[in-house]
Image (tube, rainbow, N blue to C red; front, side, top):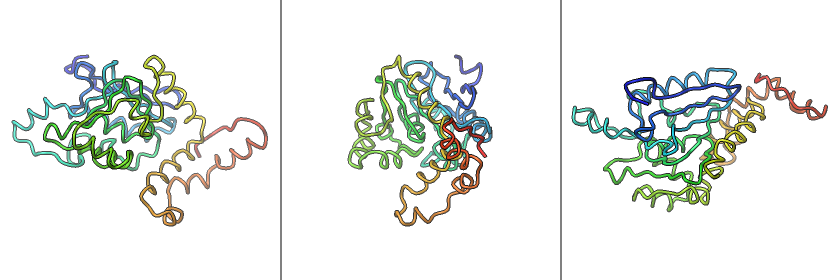
Length: 268
């Protein structure tokens, strides 16, 4: 598509699943400021829509999920005297971006085919699940460009990989193949490219099959407690767990099991 034409992000809803596609294949789905603005509106709508339970984030075409920041735009902004960037996107278009939406309660699945580099890899790291094709390539090359992985890559990679492995990739910009990512537990599943959509559909179907309030309670509890001492994690208060406990769905699950039928989730 032409950047001067339609939107940079496609947003489609079907049933309980939202599909979000960064649609700049000519530049390997690099993200300029307008892309971030469009993504912010999408995340707002996804969280607010009561019918949606899971989002799939991907990039258009077969070459890239996203190669991250649009460096041509960044070079132009630098030449115009724009302030340098650092960690986070506060004060920039599209804030809070997915990488800083710490209160996004619904699960997001990254569908990765081709390159996921720089900010593209950081988007994937911010998702709850990553399903990758066998030709996916992950990397944070910022140090080679005089930059840093400021959208959370420096923080998330060190939490999601063994520390020495993460440091090696962060400081050298070396990339990870899909097989390497699977070996280190960075992705949930790697499949041949022609199986990628079917595999993503299987995961989203399982997520939709689960009780929506339970899924949100699990996501909140895990992400909030991952750095807590275990005793503190048990005693902490979780908003979505309080909602789940008092919900109709909490009674529906055991009742459906006892009656030997599939549960009907109402999300309340």
